Image 1 (cartoon, rainbow, N blue to C red):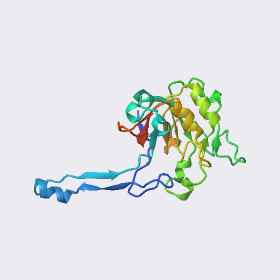
Image 2 (image 1 turned 60 degrees about the vertical axis):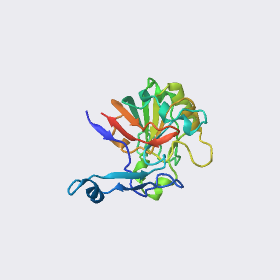
Image 3 (image 1 turned 180 degrees about the vertical axis):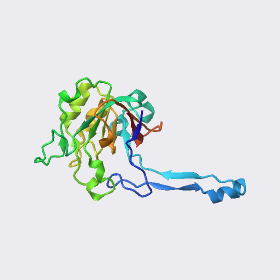
Amino acid sequence: MANIDLSHVITDGMTTYPGLPTPIVASHLTREAAETIYGPGIRFHIGLVTLCTNTGTYLDVPFHRFDDGHDLTGLDLDRVAAVPAVCLDRSPDAADRNPDIDEPGIELDPADLVGLAGHAVLVRTDHSHHWGTDAYLDRHPFLTEASAHALVAADVACVGIDSLNIDTTEGGERPVHTELLRRDIPIIEHLTNLDHLPATGFTFTAVPPKIEGCGTFTVRAYASV
């Protein structure tokens, strides 16, 4: 079995989403300072990170969208830990994509989701190839509202995408977030390396810390193939 990392690296000052605070990665205790405490040659490092909860590859739970939704402490691990998974290829080079249609909205047909109850559904767009560039923050692939309804009807465990947002950001409405989180289906955004996955035959894990009062947080997402 091989584990494939599906998370972006978090670096000091990087941008995940326009307008959100960038992370500060620093030291609380340097190795040199540790020697003054513990003695010569006894060196430790303690890091200090200031992090917006929507940084890097992260997971959303209902509290992100709804006042009365559960926060990270209420996350059901059965939805995000070693979950059987599929990767639906909706990249520009996918066989069923029409290159003559410049449409970032991705519609998942109910037929695509038959038999996927309890599965993680990862949608590959290859937009992650633009990570760290202005192109990543520009016009991005997203799921349509109809796709969200189809995912709910299929009773999937969670949904992930390798793009800036699972919703269109052209307006303030977020129908996919609304529909999935209302049904307690976690969302994982800013995945990467989905082009390294098979279509089926793997499990998916994306577990955040158990923090009270937060509806999103960074995860180390990976697939076990």
